[in-house]
Image (cartoon, rainbow, N blue to C red; front, side):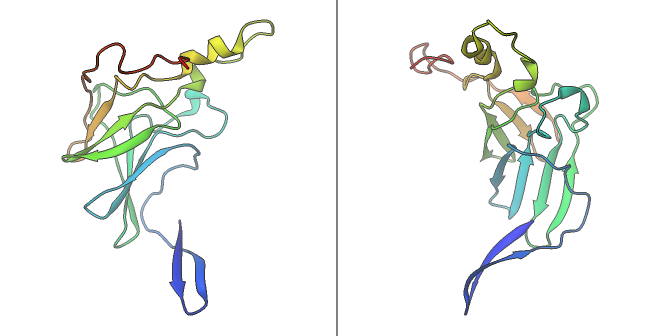
Length: 159
C-alpha cells in the first residue's frame, strides 16, 4: 500500500506498512472508500484470468485506514456468490457494497482462429441490471433486482 502525502517538499509517495492478512496480488479489482474509513475491495484477477486458481471468490477485503490493518470477510458456506469479476465498479450502500458490471474473461477461454472474437467477448460482460450486494456485517451476498425498461440499459455490444 502506498500513500501520497503533501509536505514542505511537495507531493511524495511513501510505502505504508500494513498489519493483518492482505489480499493476494491482483489486478483490475473493484474498490470503494467507505464512510466508515475503510477501503473495501472485491474481485480482480491474478493476470491470467484463470478461475481454477481462485481461492477468494466472494471474499471481501477490508483495509481499515486509521490503523492500516487488513481483514477479510468470507461468505457463509453454501451462500450464493457472484461470478469472479474483473474491472467491476463498487459503490457503498447501507451496511454494504453494491457490485456493478465487470467482466469475466475466464469464462471465454481461448477463442479459436477464424471465430468472431468480438462476438465471443460479449459473453464476458455482466449486464448492469444484475448487481450483487454484499452485507458487510455478515459477508452474505445476494443478487439484487434492478428495475429498468429494456431500452434504458444497452445490451453488451450496442453502440
